[in-house]
Length: 150
Image (cartoon, rainbow, N blue to C red; front, top):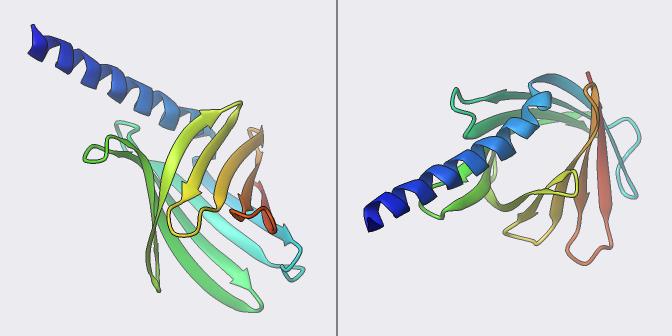
């Protein structure tokens, strides 16, 4: 009986993860994002694309940011880490790997927290063709918004 219950809990957890990731499905495809913030030069842009694993447990995000005339790339994997038993994000850059703890959907927004610096990273859907990434520092002194459209 215990094994059956544990198996059911795993299935429920898997369904919840899949549902959380499926709600991000509107991101599928390519986007152009204008970056705004107190210390962000005007004209900085981010070109982002998203795709999902066949079982909806992982989202792949590829990004090329044009900042001060230079291109920078990142690739992120968002999904369920079975070892940690929680939603996570892994961000790969030329400088190494950063991780996020993902809280998931809260009040219509998809929220995560960077593990290295405590910054909050939030996806705020605007429409099927627009959304915002909002990155706020842990001490709330800096907010950067990427306004993304197709």
